[in-house]
Image (cartoon, rainbow over all chains, first blue to last red; front, top):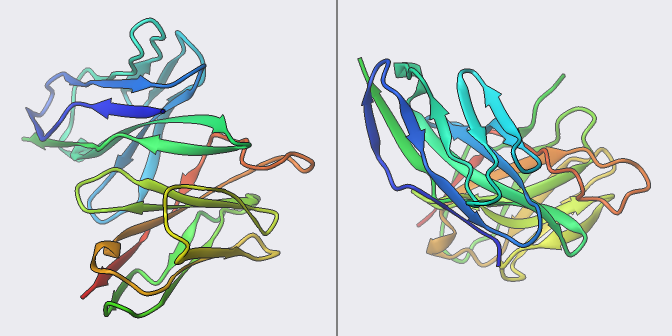
Amino acid sequence: GNSVTQMEGPVTLSEEAFLTINCTYTATGYPSLFWYVQYPGEGLQLLLKATKADDKGSNKGFEATYRKETTSFHLEKGSVQVSDSAVYFCALSKVSGGYNKLIFGAGTRLAVHP
Amino acid sequence: ETGVTQSPTHLIKTRGQQVTLRCSSQSGHNTVSWYQQALGQGPQFIFQYYREEENGRGNFPPRFSGLQFPNYSSELNVNALELDDSALYLCASSYDPPGSSGGISYEQYFGPGTRLTVT
């Protein structure tokens, strides 16, 4: 079945450090891929998306490239800020049974220190 | 543009009781999906509603049920609450074109969630 695996956290970085959070997926066909962010006490916010192979999603300095050959969608940011501290979820979406649902990874907590 | 709203924010119930959670979809959206997020885990799909009918369902027992109203708002009902039902319940809305079978749009926008605690 379809599934998402992301690196375990927590990831602890100093401000202005480079961030990578790994995400790999298992799915038949061509799912759409997403990164969502969850700040403490809040719901999920869509951070970026990619809908086909080699697409690069980007937003707020974050980037991820849809790699079909490695079934990966790693999240990167060149210089993190304290305000980036949150839980990041990788997810895939694919129409199955006539409807679309999101399948999430377990989440990776990021803590950025000044 | 109004975002997805959910009520209540927090709720404490006793095992065996019933609970109703409410969701108003984002302006212009006609499909609503519900997810359960247990502590420290990713959200799990419960079900989806389109045109007031259940369009798809995840691996949840029948005591989890829902409704969608003509204004596209939705309710999630859980009967015979169990301790393991304690979680954050998230509602997400999306737009599917009229005439579609629904649930096609992949862009879902989430509300802030309802934190349910079962004691």
